[in-house]
Image (cartoon, rainbow, N blue to C red; front, side, top):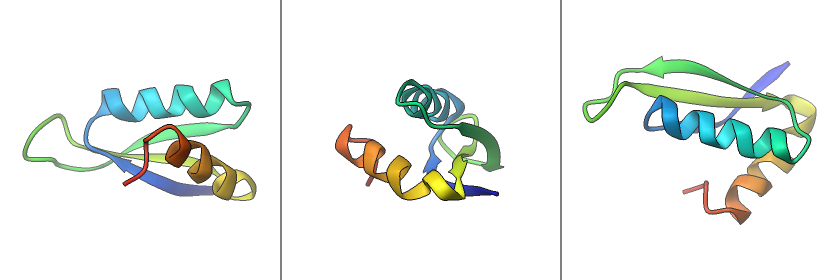
Length: 66
């Protein structure tokens, strides 16, 4: 099952985070989450539930969490 681990401000940021997670050997997906007033919309970055904690840790270590 997929779990949302981050909400990105736009598709480019979401795809960058997805690539980062995949480069660390984790599975990741991106899906639209809503409309943003500043860009092309909000996007969810998802990881497998079994890898979610590790994925969040990777994002935080690389400055991707807030």
